[in-house]
Image (cartoon, rainbow, N blue to C red):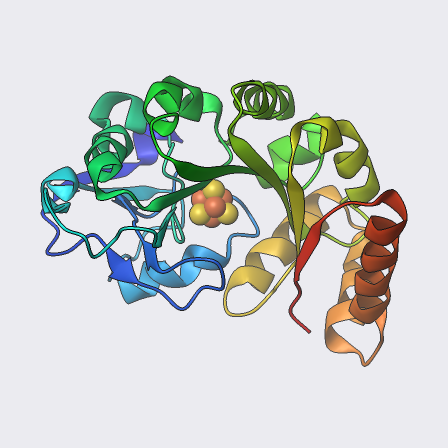
Length: 271
Ligand code: SF4
C-alpha cells in the first residue's frame, strides 16, 4: 500500500474555510486525500473534485505551507468553532513526519477559538500539550466497530481499537472534553451498544451517523461485502434499495437507549 501511494507536496492558497457542517464555523484540512483509506469513506468525492485519478487512499497531497496561512493576530476566530478535519484525518501516519496539524494548532492557540478535532488515530496524543492550552476544546474519536477483524477490513490503516480507546481515556483523564462518534453505523456489523458501553466512562457525549452510500461509496462497500460478508449483501440491498423503515427504527432505538442510559446523544442520520 505505502509504496503504491502517490505523495505530493503542494502549496495551498487558503486553509481556514467557512463550513456548513452542523457543529463548526470553520474547517481545516491539512491534507488532500486520506491514507486511512476507509472503505465507507464519504470523502471519496474529493478524489474527482481535486482531479485525482488514483484510488481513494492511494494519494495524498500535503499542504506544506498550511501553518503559514494561519493569521498571527486576528480576533475573527475568537470563540468560533474550528474543526479538524472534514475530508481527511488530521493525524495520518505522515503527520508524524510533516507535523502540519501540530504546527497549525500551535498557531491557533493565541486566536482563542473553540478547537474541535476528530480522528481515528492515537497520534493525537503527541499534541496533548498544545490542546491543553485551549480554553475550550473537544476531542472526538470515531468508531465503526470494536471488532479488530472488521476494523482491519473497513478501516485498514487507522489506529487499532485498543489504541483509540486508550487515547480517549488519556484525554478524558487530562480533563479535556471528549466524544465518541459512532460512524458509520454499518447494518449488522456495527454493535453501537457495545461501543457505548466500552467507552462511556471516558466521554462527555456520543454522536451517531448511519452509513451513507451516496456517490461512489456503494461500489466500495459492495466490494467489501461480497468479499468478506457475502451473507450481508442481500440485506444491504434491501435496506438501501427497497422501501423500508430500517434506519428509522435504528434511529428510534438509539434515541430511546440514550434516554434510558442517561447519555447525551447527537444524531446525524441520513434517510
Ligand atoms: S479517516 Fe475519515 S476521511 Fe480518512 S478515509 Fe477514513 S472516513 Fe475517510
